[in-house]
Image (tube, protein in one colour):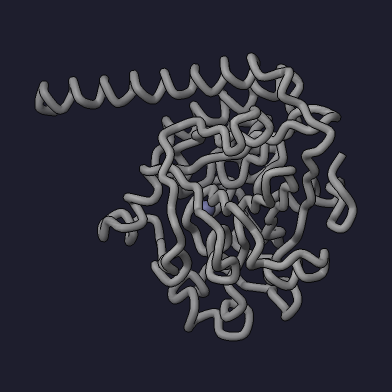
Length: 288
Ligand SMILES: [Zn+2]
């Protein structure tokens, strides 16, 4: 490697660690940010099946797993964390997700999309203030189109990757999922959505260039919505990475950050764990 490149890489690594440390220290410092007025709801927006090896390297067989999305009710506005699949992926998977339909079976029926889930809660999708996208994969941003008036909050690295041809190809991004004219707030690392510590983005790069998780502070304690930074409980217990990862070293760092947050009492909500998902109350029940 060219010495200048090597120096640049070191600086990037340093910046990454500073971001991680910042996320950790701020998360600790905000223990007074708990609020009984913040409510969290879990919703299942369809299911996918895939080879287990794609999610836990070297394992065999198929696995059926949920596509979660979350609603956070805050006095200053409603937030969605991810928006699940686009409705067309249920009835026209090849047309909508292209070659990915060769790897995933999509089990997605009418009434399971994010707009329908909100309607079932008597919430108008047009009144959602923010969509926090963990990343731009089809099962996390496919429903953005159904939430027309929200401001999208996403890591700048992820948004830029979603508009860089080689990274779009490498990460299987599809502009159809996220190119809908939303206002986009591109953030760097940690971002406190309401300025009170109750809903904070946590950079967890590695799965994709700018993946982020979301810290939600409830009266009962902290919850980290990990999304694809950690597919399963086993991913965290065993540091067992998927076969395909954008950056293995960053993903391991992100898992170690999640472990540290868990050690300080946060509950980690895994991204696609079907066994864990059985323990999570579904809307209209609140996550307590
Ligand atoms: Zn993903």
